[in-house]
Image 1: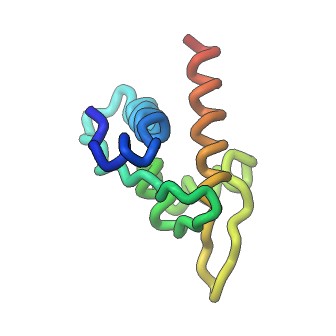
Image 2 (image 1 turned 90 degrees about the vertical axis):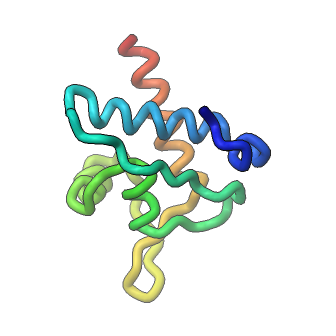
Length: 104
């Protein structure tokens, strides 16, 4: 079920994509998926590294590996903290969706 606040902001597709990414990540695992944090609606806004990790339910090491593999773009560094543009994260979600659609 999509939360009403996300549906009102046009974030339903991103929420569903995040749920699919989390489900794929936990495939075969008995662990319960963490709460999904949808990015804000403004495409030019920044998401902290911690918010991106919570969004994809990944560890800091996986985030680093994804950056090195080209899955995630290089972050914007502000005061020694990493931030990602919401637009870039939406592209990652779209790429994951297209890969899962091709695999199915």
